[in-house]
Length: 65
Figure (cartoon, rainbow, N blue to C red):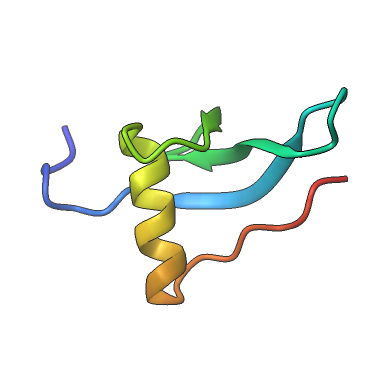
């Protein structure tokens, strides 16, 4: 089991747009070797970690296709 203070390994982060509104609604990413769709919500622990890594300059999120 991974220590709680070890940062999540986040790769291949990309925004996902809502098909009806074309607005960003989530992020698709591989987190600790598991493909996940993460809602854009600071109360979500995965999104909070994504934002932390983006703010630190260690992660970039690609635009939606």
